[in-house]
Length: 267
Ligand code: NAP
Ligand code: GCO
Image (tube, rainbow, N blue to C red; front, side):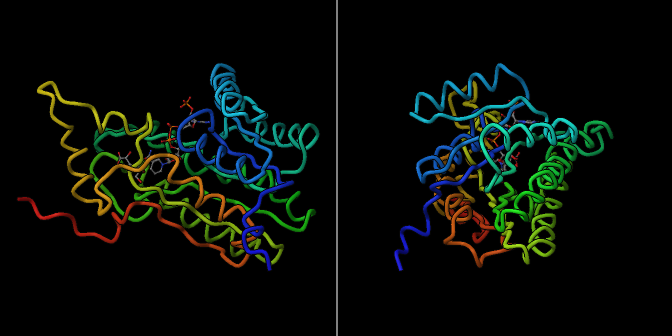
C-alpha cells in the first residue's frame, strides 16, 4: 500500500470558512499543497478579495465567496453555488470564529449570543448544508476548529468556552449520526496560536516587556513558544485525507503540549 498517497487530497474540493487569513488560510494552504481545490468564504468582499490575492501570491487559484456562516439561507445558497461552479464539497473546515474577552457578569446576552451564533451555530449551519451531498457522494470529511477552551475555562471567555465546548460535542454528534455514510467528523484543538485573534494577548508592554499573558502561555507550554498557524496545516491534511478514514469523533489537540503540562515552576 502506498501510505504516502493516503495523505493526498488530489481531486478533492475543500471549503474552509473564514479563511482570508489566520488559521483558516494556513489550513487551506496546506490542503492546496496536498492537492485540494480550495474554496473559502469570509464576511465581506474586501476580505474575500484580500484572501484571493493572498492565495494567488502562494500560487493557489482559490474560489472565494462572501457569506456570513450564521445566515442559513446565505450558506445554503453559497453551497449550491459552489457545487455548480466548483464541485461537490468533499472536505469542510469550520474555521470561522470570533472571541469576546469580557468578564461574564459584564457581558450582555446579545454579546454572548453573537459568539455562540458564529462559533457554534455557524458550524451547525454549514455542516448541515454540506452533509446531504457528502452522503450522495459516499464520503465526506468535516473538521471543526475547536480550542483549548473546549476543555478549559479562563476569565473573560465564558461565551467562547461555551461555544467551543459545544463545538466539541457537535463534532462527536456529527461523527455518531453520519459515520455510517462514510463521513468522518473530527476536531482540531489549536493551542495558543499567533494570529490577529490573539494579538492583544501578545502586545509588547510600554516598558518593552512581553505581555503578562504572553509570558504565562510560554510557561504553560512545553514547546515554550506560541503556535504558528502553519503548525495546524499538516494535522488538518491528515484529518481531511484517507489516512484518517477510521478516525471519527476525535479532537486532535495541536497545542505544543499545553493540555498535558502543569506549567513551569516560577523561578
Ligand atoms: P481570526 O484571525 O480572527 O480569523 C477568523 C476569520 O473568521 C476572519 O477572517 C473572520 O472575518 C472570519 N469570520 C468571523 N465571523 C464570521 C462569520 N460570521 N462568517 C464568516 N466568517 C467569519 O481567527 P484565527 O485566530 O485565525 O482563528 C480561526 C479559528 O481558530 C477560530 O474558530 C478560532 O476560535 C480558532 N482558534 C484560534 C486560536 C488562536 O490562538 N488564534 C486557538 C484555538 C482556536 P473578520 O476578519 O471579518 O472577523
Ligand atoms: C484566549 C485565547 C484563546 C485562543 C484559543 C486557545 O483569549 O484565551 O484567544 O481562547 O484563541 O482558543 O485554544
